Image (tube, rainbow, N blue to C red; front, side):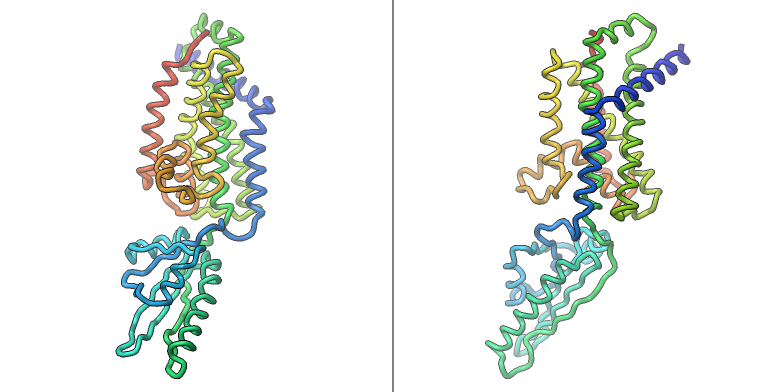
Length: 364
């Protein structure tokens, strides 16, 4: 009986995979669209744009005109309260590329030492701040201290760090987009059509068990995702220089991490197929689950761009846990066991969605 159940699972996964590959909708939304977005965003030059994060060093003098000038720049977001070790770690990872430190070493007359420490990924921040700070110092020198030594000395220091490219942000998001579409839309339509065509009813009359059907569908989605995963990874790495901190070991770990998202998104598809009553309801219900995640989970732009209240909602969505985990593995070099928040969130959601999916499963 065990052998027959395994064989049934493999046979079902084979024909489910064939059905997925032959479906234009599955191929377009799960593979063609993500590849299209990777090509478009990967071809852009520069970084992600938006406001630039600049860490304020501990002990930095903030009661001076130079700091107030930088603080007033709309394109600069000063991050205060970070310890020295945390700033160094963030600069090494590339999440923050620049540190600003202003020290007042004058006795009677104010004299400041302005140090801008930037990594190779901080060319945009340094390029913007250098002329602003120099112009501020010159203006104050001419207006307040025309006959005295300069108000401040300005120096730019280079620090080691990764270059955070657009492709490093976009590609993990598109892997999540692919898995979301394949899991939710693919599973919901396939299972609903099998039930509507009385295929599941016929299978119920055979020794095939429910877990074999679910296992076969899971394997077929896994095979399809592996195909798309390696196509997108090869495109990102060889064409657009996608960052892999630990080389191809990172690729393997990203693929293993994908299993966490696969179960959740397939479970959503199972729930939809068991809840809806007619074929016309599948697409609206599936869109209700997928579209908010596509817009709120940082696929195309950072979650930090949203208001704080909305960020709290974004941070508990399954696609956010998944995409953040992929980015941490690829760019930060973290291992799966070093991401308790992402892994824990996905595991909890897997249990909740899995139990609901089993209860929602219907033979006819």
